Image 1: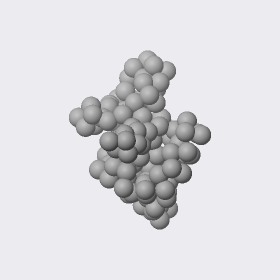
Image 2 (image 1 turned 90 degrees about the vertical axis):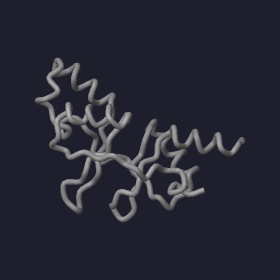
Image 3 (image 1 turned 45 degrees about the vertical axis):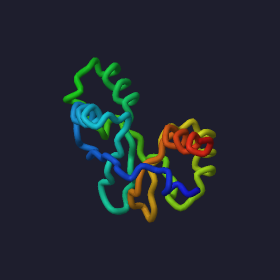
Length: 128
């Protein structure tokens, strides 16, 4: 099974210069734990920001989330895999590197996102 069959294609993105408050509002509205951070240019890489990163930043800066931008906190480049590889290779890589979600790209263009939860749902479908 290829990653493209398991990944989520409805990906929510945010600009790197958005505030953490905007990121949190978007996460809350869409009930997400992470957002993909847009590229700044065609040759740039995608990033990812998670609720854990935001929480750490809020605690470190004593809570003023309107003064902190996404680019101050997010990870770039986000770990990415191709939509055309086998799910087992993506899963193995994620587990070996302790990564909960990866950005799915082909030719440096965003195709989707794959999380450990997506992989778990896929595996559960195999035993039904």
